[in-house]
Image (cartoon, rainbow, N blue to C red; front, side, top):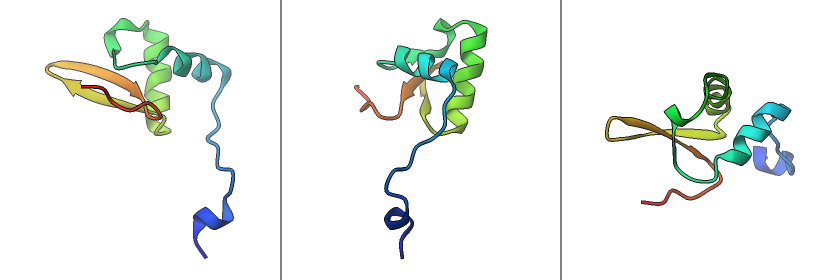
Length: 71
């Protein structure tokens, strides 16, 4: 039996603060555009695999994982 058969509704727990930050990440955004507290929240979201960090030149960009990356 596969895990996907057992788990029909799989959700990752997010706090209210994390949800608000996720809503702000509508596109590829430089990490330095966020205040320090939101950067900390983004790091936690990255650990939960809800946000990806992407190097764009020398700049760290962040992108919500459910949005396709645009070139």
